[in-house]
Image (cartoon, rainbow, N blue to C red):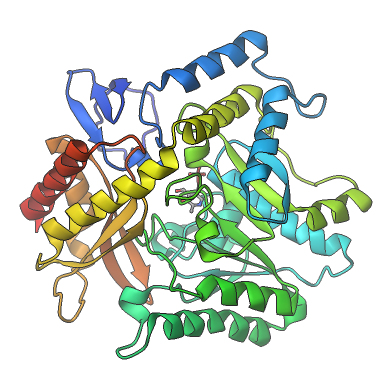
Length: 439
Ligand code: PLP
């Protein structure tokens, strides 16, 4: 009997024993094409010799030294490298162990910033309904996914949620993409005014929404207007790039494509590519300097922040992306994946939308394409597609999301940046088979 506390108590899992490139291998020898990099993690695939060697090398020097006493070479080098590549204005890096720690740190940093600037009444966070920012209580409060939040509701921090930027469902007939983007962003200003700008500390959003909506990119101009609104009311903009960042959409930071800089950015997943658990919160010089001049101490911290072996992995991943030209792969192979999805599902009666950027792609499943009516949630479609695909040897990420009370199903794809054309074809064929076996 296993003593591991699994995610699902009644679902026995195969044991993974190996990984090679885009494949994972279980103890029976079965191979699985990793079409979602787990959950958008394994951007370099499995068994990357360069990253493994970098981690081993660091372990030989020193595995761990508490950041209350030391900084380390890989942590310093990783911070430099992230800042050199980050949107303008970001100046400091706080290294953590994953995505939830990064967003939780961001929320606490925003709060402390306003306490230290003498505006402690700014404590309100605004987020979007179709979003996921992590599972710790603060991050969960920020998220808008009812299914994940429901049973913890009394414990969660109060956060307001506005509508996501979700053209497939919320753009009106006859409305241009640009006009829709501006209308969606306007909700933020309306909410700030409703709450009173002097009470709002930050707005948090994913540039391209991942797990709760299936790779939904923003409408053109949406984030530029969001940036303007945040500036007008002195509200910090936190961009959660935990899933969509680190090259996944074809640029190192997804928000580069929207032409804006946040005050705080969160990255994780692809940063360590699964070789070590690592995330990072990047903040502006203005926020850092305020705290440095004030208390001089961020009232936060975990034992493993700035972990040297994890930082070495992050550094090696960023080097691999740059040295091997992998952003180009993401753009070119992302276009191939998009084309393959459109060829396979463009006329499919139950695929309402095909979307995404780079190697971050999603399809939305509908009961009726004409009305966009979602499937009955009781069908548990997402779980069934995941199982059928897994059985066939494909790892993909089907999820159900809720938008304005309406539940919808989608499948998220986020394969390694090294995926080749024949693997893309195999991925789409297996996904097609799994969907047709279930619907
Ligand atoms: N933010 C986003 C956008 C995510 O997709 C996730 C995880 O899926 C998180 C935060 C939380 O990251 P982690 O699971 O590493 O804590």
